[in-house]
Image 1 (cartoon, rainbow, N blue to C red):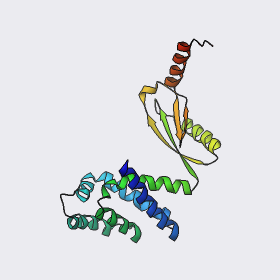
Image 2 (cartoon, helix red, strand yellow):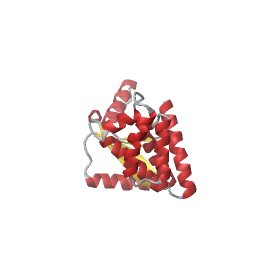
Image 3 (cartoon, rainbow, N blue to C red):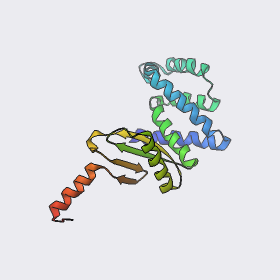
Image 4 (cartoon, rainbow, N blue to C red):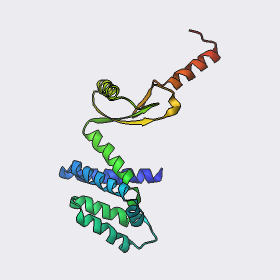
Length: 183
């Protein structure tokens, strides 16, 4: 929880700088690229976030990567700061928050979609259109699978949860039968 709050603060700080100079979208692309690099090179992230190595040694490793990047000066300095403050290990979480914040600024709503099985392309498109109509905003969907649902779909948009899963319907039926409601 604390790490999450700190990650949000770092993301908001960078976003604030980006809004001031109008480059928040570019900063987001840079962070995304760095996060993808860290995911693809787990050993790199382990080294630069490991306190067994001195800060100077970790800075040298980070600098070797930053020199070859086309990141903005602000993002390079931000990544250096994360390393100095021992927060570079949560760069992916910071990136995720940053992305969510930039979506909010851009009028994009995120929807977490949970299904029992993969959705076909046409079903995804219909769901996206329905959610766009419901929210009056562009919707960015993240689809996850959960076999325990049996069937149907659960949609989470912010605090709104639309549970159309077979599992939820069976639970509702079970509760109705317990209360003696038949219809």
